[in-house]
Length: 574
Image (cartoon, rainbow, N blue to C red; front, side, top):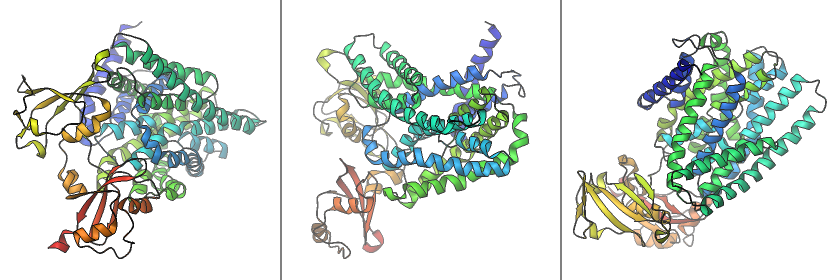
């Protein structure tokens, strides 16, 4: 092996990692940084590397996407399927088809392509990308309301089979005389969804059971899950199913079961997912020279902007409006039609099949991904805040360490840093309310470990170590919120000064607070008010405005609002 090759490869990784903090400061998606570094190390850049091994790129890209989808699946809560599954599946099927047709029409006009080649371009860029969506939603510190985040994550994890089906169908039609191509493609679609769906769920249960039954060195559990997940991915691909769908569902099953050493698995897989994204976007960047993109910049920009500003919004409005989304949510989902690695990987199919104009198709897909990451990726966070879709975050621990001892059960050691307004004034440790079956292990202050005595005062800057189980993590996080939140996301500013039960009646609220709700009957409960406004799927952060009062969903359980915040119109009280 050429030592210069490994040196250059390692330096590319180092440069990309060092530039990643800069991307967050300037609001640029880190994936775009990886792509640009790859392009700069290519033939047209200072690196001067000539790389055109499309077969190797295809192999690396598939494995990398598998790792990314496995990690994203493990971080997807099963409860999110309650509100996001139906709209996400509509977007992942009908929405992908509509996007492909709209993009094909524009590609046919601006690139002067044969209509079949235009349909191929539309099919390739029809799906949103899981790597880009997971990276931007989970890596920007954004805490969107569950209806929006669930829809976007499930859509990006499940829309690949439809895009693959459309792409392979068009490649087959172009490469052959068309005999039986459509029939074969429909069979392929059925196999992609059915084998991928069933195989992923079964594989997830098998991997979780294997991890719980076998005793290993703690550091081997993450590797076991990664290797087993890639095995499921490869096996489903070999059977003709969608490996992408399978490994995503496999991750969902693993992440929502009690699996030994799960915090360590997630921690290691976070690093593996980043490594996969680095390698994926660097190698894809090497495949393209900037000089190849310049001739199609004008036409590509028209197609990319039409996709962003016209096709995606129309598709979203025409498909998911019946599912109870408000205008702000529809607007944000329309904007997060991020394109990333998947369209570039799909654009390798026509090159491998030696189709005419394959290079043009590949470069067009690459250019559209660049524009999507630059335009949509850089504006994602400010747009979410402008549309008021952020909700207060539960206090996540700084670190979770499984104890892995039979006597400890599923207890973990969790570290919570104390920050924010709640901890500016010292509070006595013995007066803090913690969930049952938890205990304070210690308090760290200025690198000194203090014994957790009842009269010990804790304040901002301290770190509290707790023994607790994952089941009480949300409740514990509220008690020891370790995140400094903006003022508009503080509990009282967001939810209001009063907390009511969801089963409280409007008539009772009228009597207690001296308010009249003329438009609704007094025997209606607060929970029923939210159910009416959200078509039965309320999430935390939903609001119902009743005259001078705004009701804010504070806690939900099984499609039922259990706690409601009440905000009074201050101008009315003035």
